[in-house]
Amino acid sequence: MKIFLFGGTAEGHLLAERLAEAGHDVTCAVATAYGRAVLEPRAHLTVLVGRLTAGEMAQRLRGFDALVDATHPYAERVSENIRAAAAETATPYYRLLRPREEAAGVLWADSAADAAAKLQSLPGNVLLTTGSKDLKTFTAVKDYQTRLYVRVLPSVESLTAALSLGYPAGHIICMQGPFSRALNEAMLAAVNAKVLVTKDTGKAGGFLEKAEAARAAGAKLLVIRRPTEETGYGLEELLERLTKGGLHP
Image 1 (cartoon, one colour):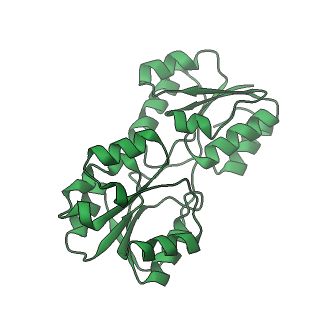
Image 2: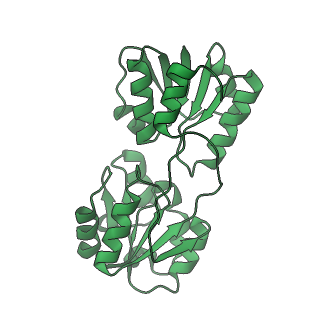
Image 3: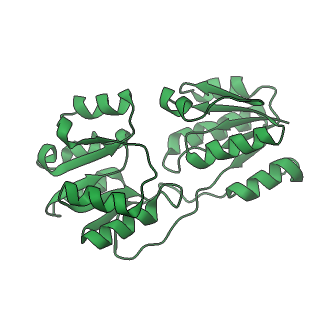
C-alpha cells in the first residue's frame, strides 16, 4: 500500500516508521529541515521537506492509496488543507489523534492572544513553551523582553524568529523535548518563573510533566485550548486499521 503521511509530531514519525517496517511505501511530508533531521529515510520511507498549499497537496496525492494527517493538534489551517486535498483526490483520509491528559489547577486560554492578555494580570516571570509560531503574539505582553523566557526547538528558524522579535538571547532556550518533570522544574527555578504557558499537547507533548513541574514549583499553569474537537484514531488503532483492516476510514 502507498501511504502519504503529513507528519511533524513524534507520534506521526513513529507511525511512519512502523508502517514502513510493515512493508508499506510511505511518503512523509514535514514542514522544515528540522523535521527532516529527526526522521531519517529508510527502506519504504521517503521524507519530503517543505510547506505545501492545498493545491500542491492534491498534486502530491495522485497515486496514493491513503492519506494520514499526523500534524500537530494546533495546526488547524494545515489540517483544513489536508482534508481538502483528500476530498479533491478522493483519497481515503485518516486523522492521527493525540489523546488529551487531565491536570488540576489549570488556567485556560482560548487562544495564544487570550493567553497573552491573561498574562497581563499574572505577576512574575513566565516560561513560555508554546513554540516559535506564537512568539509574535506574546510580544503584546507588557515587559515581555524581561518577563518572558521562551523555550523553542533548536533550529535556526526558531532562534532567528525569537531574536527578530526582540527576545533577548539570554531569554531563549533552544532544546528538543520531551522534557522530564525534573528538567521542567529546574527550568522554572532557573528563570524564577511564576507562570508556565503551554498547549494541551497530551502525553506525546509532555503535558503531564509540565503540569507536575508547575505544581511542584508553585507556578501557575496557563494552557491554550485546542482549536477544534477532532475525530480520528490513536496510533495503535490506526496502525492496525492500515496494516490489517483495509481502507475503511
